[in-house]
Structures are given as C-alpha cells and as structure tokens.
Length: 268
Image (cartoon, rainbow, N blue to C red):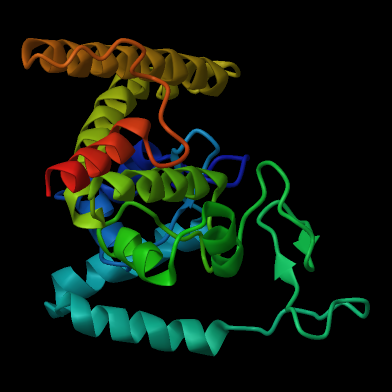
C-alpha cells in the first residue's frame, strides 16, 4: 500500500518506507548518490529538505529496477531516462503579453516571471541566478559539478542563490568550488543526523506530527550550526587566530585580504 500522503510529496524517510519492501538495500546515502549523479531531482523545501513527488518515486523505482534486474550501468540508465523525458516533454504555454525576447518562466509555486526581479521564495532561472549572485557561468557550473548547487527541474531555489553568493565571496580568498566539497559533505552528514532524530516523530502519523517534526528539525539545525561555529572559533583561537563574531561574513573583498595584497606589493 502506498504511503503517499495527502500533502502530495514524501520526505526521504518516507521514500525509504515506500521502497524498502521491493528494494531491501535502499538507503539514504544511495538515494543521495543517485541524486548527485543526476538520475533523480527532488524538489527542496525552504529549509532544505528533499520533497519527493509521486513522479520522483516512480523515477527512483525505475532506476533501482534497472540496476537490480538488468544490471545496467548508470550511464545507460541516464540515457534511457533522458529519452523518456524527451517523450514526455510538453512545451509550456506562452503568455500573450510575455516579452518576445525573454521566455516565460513557470515558477514552482504556480506563478510566472517575464523579466521582473524574482521575489523572496521564488525560483530562479540560470541567468537570474548568475546575475543576482554576480558570479560567472563557469563558477556556477563548477558549483553544480561538485554538488553544492542543485537544480529543481530547470530552475534554482533561493537557497541556491545564497550558496552562490557565499561561494563567490570565498573566491576572494582563493577558495575554489572543489575545496568546498568537504563543507557539502559535512552539511549532508549533519542533515542525516537531524533527519534520523525526527524520523520517530514522522512515524507517529498524528495530525500535528509533521509540524512538530519541522520545529524539532529547525531547533536541532540551529544548535548544530551554533556548535559548528563554536568549534571553528575554538580551533582558530588555538591556532592563534581569535575569531570573535564569526557569523558575519564579508560581502566584498575582505579588508584583511586587501591589506595582505598591499603588504606583498610593499615587500616586492
């Protein structure tokens, strides 16, 4: 019997419950791996949690069946899924008053966008993300390659904009996208821990279970972030670099970085 809830989407723990009878070896890490490989692309909630639609679950089932029953490599599975996507693609309707040089963007919340700046919570096109974050196409591609930014269909979430802006700011220190893989891996481990903590609440299936799980997850996330910041500050202090007020990130090239360049020039 399907566990698909009335709200229209499943959490990753609910997807595991849905598929485990047919695929006993299914796990959170395997689902995330298949997402990283581009075989599935679940949506994200504003707080960053994966939201699997019935179509996402069916797509995941196809991938798992192809691996189990036909022993197909991921490359072949990806090609077959691409063929299915082309067969099922329907061109979106064009608004009569849309700008002739700019395609209408259909938002995940049912709205559209035809050249106006994206509002809070809106999905962004690739061009809008590049312009809003002030980064290059090449850097965005690198961030996607290393799993720091993921698309929702053909669009990007507001959280992707924050990641892009922060990664752009870090480039002033010489940080490249590949250096941030450890940050992504740490965030995924912390999220896995939080998801495991709220899973018993979700299994209660009571009317307020979902809301309680959401509050618990946010509270846990806030404490984890506080702990993370305290640990980094402590480690920097031990190394002789006090880091009071660690939470405020620079929006432009840091003064210390500029001064370092000046000192290099003076010593040359």
